[in-house]
Length: 115
Figure 1 (cartoon, helix red, strand yellow):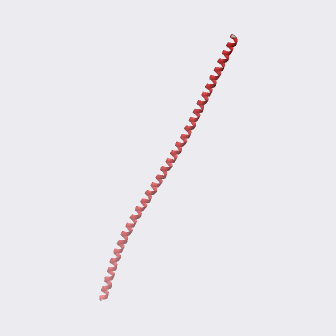
Figure 2 (figure 1 turned 90 degrees about the vertical axis):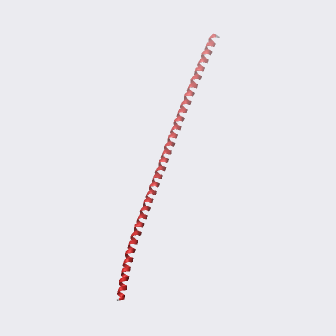
């Protein structure tokens, strides 16, 4: 029985060692799976952040373009107003000259009729 007990004890130690190795292997696999999952999550987060930054840059670019367009539109409006004021002032000058010439012409005609 001593020999049989020793063999049973040796077999029990072997089975316990095998179970311990199996648990260590399972723990190592779970750690690897956790690490792979964490890497995939980090990659997804990085892509999301990159996409968000691209979207934000596109929005800023669009706002910049809209702002530049608004500035150009305002500049054109100011230029148009300036040109309209200048044209109006020139038209008033021409009207004054024409009125003077008309008056002068009427006086000449009136004098001629008096003769």
